Image (cartoon, one colour):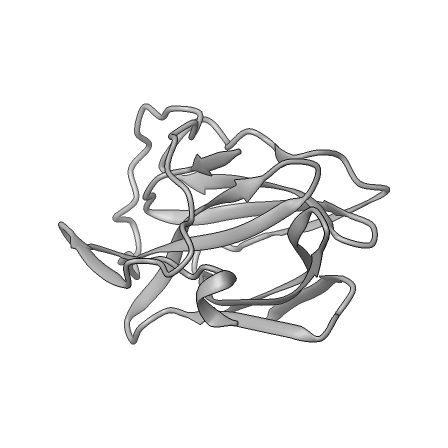
Length: 171
C-alpha cells in the first residue's frame, strides 16, 4: 500500500516497530495536531525518539533485503543536527541513504508498506527559523502517493523540495 504523510514544517517524533524487518513507522509532525497513521503492521519490538525543538533530521539510512515477496527494509538510522538515533532493526547487505541538501531537513515521509515497510521516501524542507512553526489544522497524512522504482529525482514544490529515494532505484 502506498502512502504519503505530506510535507510538514518539521518532524517531531518517530516510532518504529520491528523484528527481522521494519514492520511499521509512525511519525508526528510539528505544526499539526495529528500524527500519521501507523504505516505497516506491528512488530515484536518498539522503539523511537522525540526531537527537541531545535533538532531536525538531516539524514535517513538503512538496509533492506529482497525476498520472494519483494523488498523489505530491515534497519533504519536517523541522523539529526545533534545526534544519531538507531540503528533500529537488523543490518543486511543492501545499504541505502538519503541526505538533506545544505540548509534543509527531512520534513515528511512517504513510501509503501504491507506486512512490513517496503520503501521509504522523504520530503525535504528548509530548516525553520526559531518561532516560525505555528500550529496548523492537520490531516492524518493519508495521501495516496508513494515510491516508484526509478524515482523522479528532485522536484521543486514552493519552498519545499521533494526527493524520491526508491530502493529499486539505488540497487
